[in-house]
Length: 75
Ligand SMILES: [Zn+2]
Image (cartoon, rainbow, N blue to C red; front, side, top):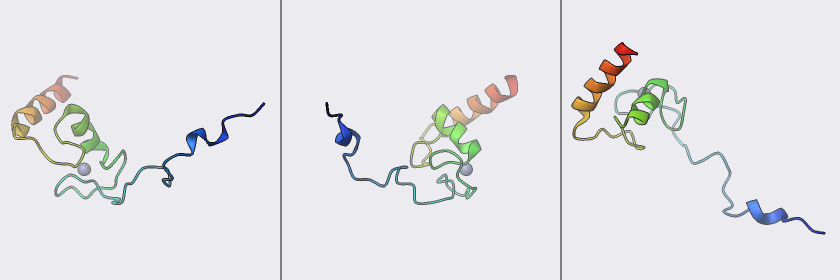
């Protein structure tokens, strides 16, 4: 009758990810982080594919940004 105590104890990390910065990682933003490494607004960008995990914009950012703002107005 023994339970698997150590099963979840692999990795040895501190838990809670490895976020270092407390500011949004999108260039020139600098707002306080809300989700992952983004502020509230830029987390929305991330979900829409406007920025990647590292806060970098894709080459077709302008197009995506336009679609994003249009969608926001409609919704
Ligand atoms: Zn931001």
